[in-house]
Length: 242
Image (cartoon, rainbow, N blue to C red):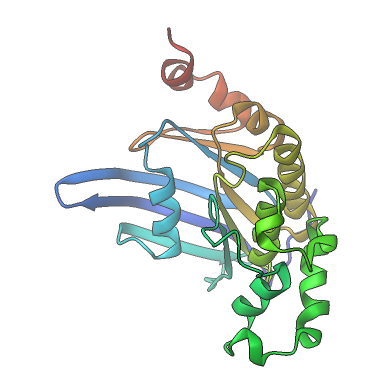
């Protein structure tokens, strides 16, 4: 049994969430709870509203409903939220290194005015969490898709979040890179007792690594354990019907 730390986020409650853009309803009446120490997979067809839901949790998209965070004692908490997008758009010919990227994100000063030595140990520590410390001086354009996503994951861990949102983080990554990423996410849940909400289209990886699953298609069709969701009528109709 995992020990929950009272100073850390222990529960995230999404209640009656809805997003509408003009006359178009993206999703409505979305309710679920995320527990610390668990990896929850958010699955559903294209256009189901998955990425919009993550952005609404981040506060980037206006929504109806309430979002509440509680620590292990039931006290309301203002959490630290980490986010990893599907990909990072940048000039692949740029000489920008992984260390440069971290420096740009971790300081308010222009990168060329910062001392790399002052943040190098901090960056190396976070890269070490995702088994990527060797990439610290690598040029961003020279990274594979899997390596880049691990770098973005390391960046999302500074500062260490209570809730980590992953928006299809291994889209376009090969099977080996995908397996490494999921293993890292599961290890972060166990080691750091954080809650992770991960959008995925790879059902085999979801079956292998998720603690809980939310099936979304404009609304929550089903939520529960992998077995409960994957064996449900809603799942069969949405993914496996001929």
